[in-house]
Length: 139
Image 1 (cartoon, rainbow, N blue to C red):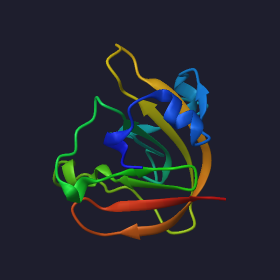
Image 2 (image 1 turned 180 degrees about the horizontal axis):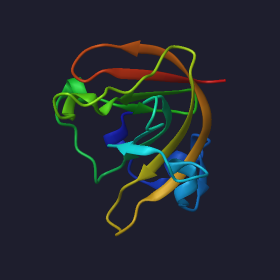
Image 3 (image 1 turned 90 degrees about the vertical axis):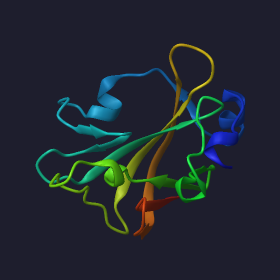
């Protein structure tokens, strides 16, 4: 389903996502040392992508068709944030076969997003473009 078309948290639960309470460790790692770039959490030394959190719901808008993201219980299509990084910044390192922790945050009209876990997913495709995208599939 297109990320900007999800209208309620129950839709995510129906897809099999599990509600979770936000804890910084789930995204920033056990030692709180991961770097966050627009929902992509990486090792600061290697730039290896370790976790993502995609925002979905009526609080999200689609910039244009190139920036479409999708989410389902079988597959996630995520835009890498490197298109908006400053010149000279190191790009994220992600390869086909990498295992990534996947989280989805429902952004409705409330002050705080509701977080859901999809678990570990495997990168099945890396696509170059503006933006670069990764497709993640269930293990």
